[in-house]
Image (spheres, rainbow, N blue to C red):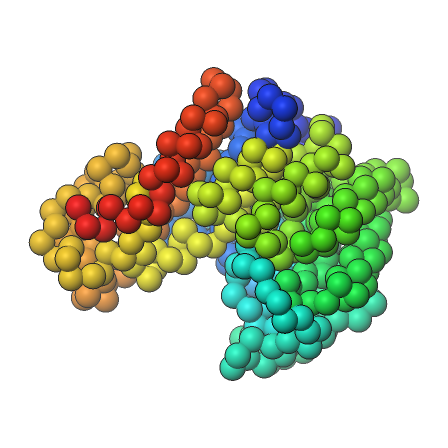
Length: 416
C-alpha cells in the first residue's frame, strides 16, 4: 500500500506557558515519537558498538543515519532493495536521514561534528581546520567532493540528495543545505542562505516527483533546514521563506530542521527566533545538539527532537555521563571502584557492571568497553529528554531544569 502525506502528522499535547516549548507526538508510517525526544545517531545504519535491539530496549524511539556515508557505502540502491533503512538495519521504528549538507562544511573546512560553538572574533570564508585538506567545493548547482574513503570524485545536488534519501527510505529526511560556520563572514552567510533557499525549492519539487513515482513505499516527510548562523534577521528571514515555500504540486515542508553553526551562549535565543516565525503545527528538529544545558534551552524555546553523535562518540573514548557531569572512566581512581557509573541510572550497564570493570575493559582495549559505555550514555540522553517531556506535561519543567542544571558540571561524580 502506497504512502501519502496524511501518514505523517504532529499533535501538541502540552505547552510551556508563555514560551514556545511543548510536548507532542510525531506520527510516522513506522510508529510514533513522543516529543521532546532524543534521536541517537547511527551514521552508517548502526549506532557504533550497539545492537539495534539494544537501542530499542534503552528507550530510543527513532534513529538517524547519514545519507552521505550510506551513499558511499553500501550504496542507496542496496538499502532500497533491502526494503529501506529500517528493514536493512533491523530497526522497526521511525528513522531519519540527514541530507549530506553537513559534509559540505566538514569536508570543506575539516571541522568536527559540533554545531553549538563558542563565539569567534576572526572571520574568513576560506578557513580550513588545522591539518585538514579541503575535500568539497560549493557552487550554485551543488557540491563536488572527494570521498574520504578512496578519494573518488562525487557530486551532490539537491536532486541527488533527495533521490538518495528516497532510496534510503527514512520516515523523516532533510532538504539539502549549505552549512556555514561562525567563522564565515556576514556576506557569505547571506549568500549561503540565499543558495540554501534556492536549493530548498528544488528539494521540494524533487520530493513531490519521487513521492509520486515511489507510491509503493511508505510516505517520507521532508523537513526544510534553517540556516543564518548567529544573525537574528537571517534566521527569521530563513524561517519565513521556508514556511512559505511550496513545491510545483503545492506541498510545503512537513517540518523544519534548525541547523547551522550556533553560538552556544545564545542557542536558546536563536531557537526562539526561529520558532517565532515557524508554523506551530509543524515539528522542529534541532540538528547536532545533546548537552543538557543546550537541550533545556532549545526545548524551552520550541525544539521538539534532537540528534547528536556525542553520546556514542565520547563513550568510545571512555567518557561517561552522570547527573553531576561527564567524567572519564579510564582514570586511575576507578581501578577499585565497585559502584556503577551512576547509581541513579536504570540502564543495563549500570544494573550489571561496575566502574572498576569498565576501567579494566578500556585499559585492556576490549571492544565491550565501547558497547557498555555507549549503552549508558545513550540511555542517559534519551531518558533526560523523556523526563523533560514529562515535566512539561505535569507543569514542573522549570523546577526540573533548575535541579538538573544545578547538579550538571559540578564534577562530584568523579571524586566521590
